[in-house]
Amino acid sequence: MANHFLPNPKRQPLFIERGEGAYIFDSDGRRYMDLVTGLGVNALGHQHPRITAVIAQHAGLIHTSGLYGHCYAEPLAERLCQMSRLDRALFTNSGTEATELALKLIRCYGTSIRASKTHIVALQNSFHGRTRGALSVAGQPQLREPFQPFAQAVTFVDANDDAGLRAAVSSETAAILFEPILGEGGVVPLTTSFLQLARELTHQHDALLVADECQTGLGRTGRHFSFQHSGIQPDVVTVAKPLAGGLPLGAVMFSDAVNRTFPPSAHATTFGGGPLACRVALEFLDVMEALLPNVREIGGLLENGLREIAAQHSIVTQVRGQGLLLAMQLAVPGDSMVADARDRGLLINCTQSTVLRFLPPFVLTDAQVQTALTILEAVVSSGTSK
Ligand code: PLP
Image (cartoon, rainbow, N blue to C red; front, top):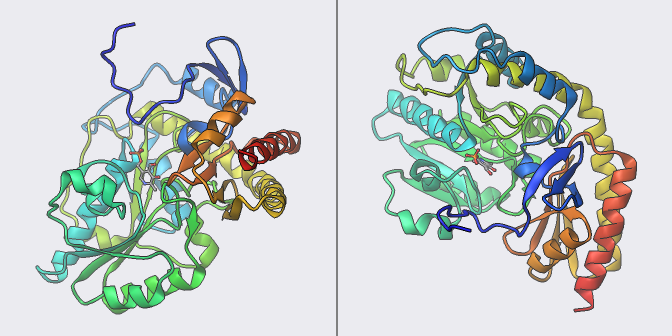
């Protein structure tokens, strides 16, 4: 086969042909339970009947551009604002672009107070996307280094390091940016006390609290947003991944106070927030809402099962996460376990080289959890004996 397409990131040896519910099928017709869901995008599983029906019904108007209105943008913006308790929403095409927009909001808010108030505090091991703006706030040196220097001044603080956070924030801080659970960084939940301190410090220094909920938001942890577990209210929230049922769509919600400092038309996009994507997103939100109890219940079941595996195998040193964003920390690299699981018909993913991450669909059943746990037990046993 010709070699023009550059797979990026490194691909697994699997050609996906179709998906159905919690399963995908490869080009040989082999079935795999999908606990990766396209990195958290296919949160309703594959071919959810309400998503496929709404795509078919609304295929007559796919795109309008931002120049013209359509009837789904305002209802979607209203819904996202109600859910996040914020006032305004703008649409993007991806999580990375949502981060870029958040950086613009931070810049405008900070400099509206003082020209030098541009500094951002972000977290070690964080991930917010791959453009240079998003990389400037990524706490992963290997991602940043090829593209340095960056124009943005950023201080990186360890997750849950209260003293480090206190020391990093000053009157020059324009924002603290965080993922409530560091996803790509290895599924590391931030503690309630750390998040509350971040809120306190940002209030104290008139800075913004910005939650990147691209991986954790929209039901993944059993609530609309992960920050809601800790009772804090951010000023800016970004979402993307599952929002439009697999079509590219992101959004940034922000307060009126932030909006007052943002010049009119200071952000626009040709594709972002088109009619089809917005209509599908409204459907996604309805279905997601109804599945929240299942996310909590099935998430608890999966987490308990992972803990039982960890109790029996010292190679698993910790189980972390919330709802249906869970992980097993291994004492060894996890790539061979990912391959072994795939051979046994289960798709999982490895981050930070030693963390097995699970991002199952919200429609997962008790029986499917048991099947996944049986396979994982076998995978970990065989990894232990190597
Ligand atoms: N923010 C977080 C927390 C993410 O996990 C990701 C992607 O994994 C992004 C931003 C970037 O989103 P996208 O890949 O849609 O650009």
